[in-house]
Amino acid sequence: MSDSPGTTPHVFLIPGFFGFTSIGELRYFRHVESYLAELMAARGIDARVVTVETLPTAGLRQRTTRLLDAIINHAGEDEPIYLVGHSTGGLDARLLASPGVALATTRDTESVAQRIRAIVTVSTPHHGTPVAAFFTSLVGQRLLRILSILTLYSLRFGRLPLSVMVRVGALATHLDNATSLDRSLLNDAYAVLGDLPEERRLALEAMVQEVTLDQRLMPQLAPAALDLFNASTGDRGTVAYGSVISRANPPGLRSTMRAGIDPYAQVSHGLFSFIWLIASRTPTTRIPQLSLEHRQALEQGFGSLPTWRDSDGVVPTLSQPWGRVLYTAFADHHDTIGHFGDPNYDPPHVDWLTAGTGFRRPDFEALWASIAGFLADNS
Image (cartoon, rainbow, N blue to C red; front, top):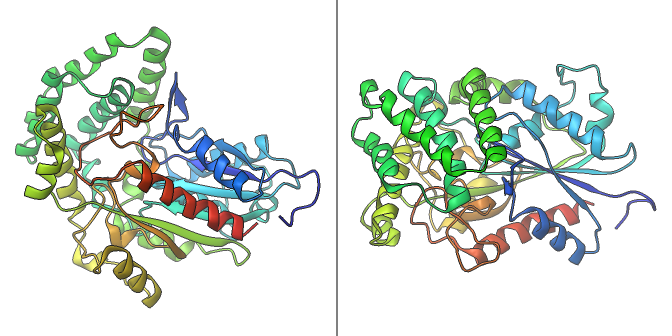
């Protein structure tokens, strides 16, 4: 590689919405960290891969300041920087690299931004997502607290108690009824924490508290807000930008059959279908206009151009392209970072919600190989 002797390239992995670095042995990028380092080493680059400690639902400016701090704390002054952001993490990366950005810090932002070689965004809502607007509603705010608990519990144990999952899944039939999300359901969600060791339970409770107290991120991810973000945030000419695009099949007979006959998987798929429905509601006035390059990449990757209703269950597919399209995946929002069902791998891959995408370890490896190749090409 072209870097001078004594410098170590640093790849910073930036968590997205609900983002956390680790809770006990639970890590947001658990399957990515070591595998990406291996892929870079195979390309002759001895890179250090660092996961950024972010704020789950804080505003973009606060999250980006955390990213800046992580870079300064982990990378030397002459070491090249590469940023890989999942979901909202991709917006953090773009904001840090934007010329003239003003963050809530006295640290030298520009000197850090000048060392960024490449940014890869994975399943990122560059043009916003309707899911963010939903989470600002009364039902959405309470559901957000429940999902923050149940997401990490399921990643730890593979699945939730079926009784709790059934009650959460029932929300799909009560979308417009705030009373359906009653206090007893929230209590049930907290009750599952009793199965966790105390240290991990306290860490998870602290995360839930952060989500409850600071939800500035949600309105900032609405399509109208991202229109303003893109108008005021410019790309840096010395940075190479790439994106990974995810798309789940619309919920229906095919995805239901792929979920299998397991009652838990069917309830989980029902909850995925509920969130997918919300993600499909992009206002027609906010549908992004794709470049010819992006249209061709999506048509080639998916076999046809996605519509404004298509999404990965959280982020509309048409909202995700930025820079060069590196990979198109039939995957849900968390499949792309290794949270899919594959119990035979060590450590096992554990799904968040059953989307019926069929995304598995070979797809995961191909996706991250495309990212590693892009970073290596821009070293």
